[in-house]
Image (spheres, rainbow, N blue to C red):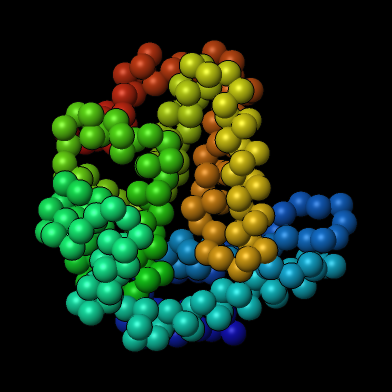
Length: 250
């Protein structure tokens, strides 16, 4: 049912044309409980939240969660409209120390959020989620802070990263950032990976969208693999792979 839903959706309006398949992933395990993930076109990820005694059961449960979210995403209330933006900004203001006046100032967090929403007018929340995941990851690994220190405005950063998808190249760049952090603070990679695995499991059992947590795990695992497979891996500075060079941002 999930596969048919997305095939039909893509035929109707070419949604997520760059990624046209539903991808399943089962975690290796000698026995139950089994865990399965399903990644939708566009990158949103869901997993089984029930305790499953077989891989097939885990896969079906993950597909069920993904299908429910896919159907829910089609509701008018899940599309970014002017009314949706107004309500979202008001909620953001209520949960922070900001004001509604900040919404017109892209240099503030509220203003940046407002700008991101307006830039994605007409998209669904699952479509918007991919961009949000990129910025969650950039915030997590310290790239946003580094860009602010180079005097890049939030609006410039948003405009730049809105052109890109979360792919292997971006993951590799972030993995290099964490290799550099590991050299500065030995043990931080293992600590972050344990935290990421715990967050991923908690989010999966709660039936939440998982891409941010899963990407963190993949990036940290990639960094650890590179360190242990090649202890002499050059640091980003050795290869002149600074943050701005990595991202191509000026």
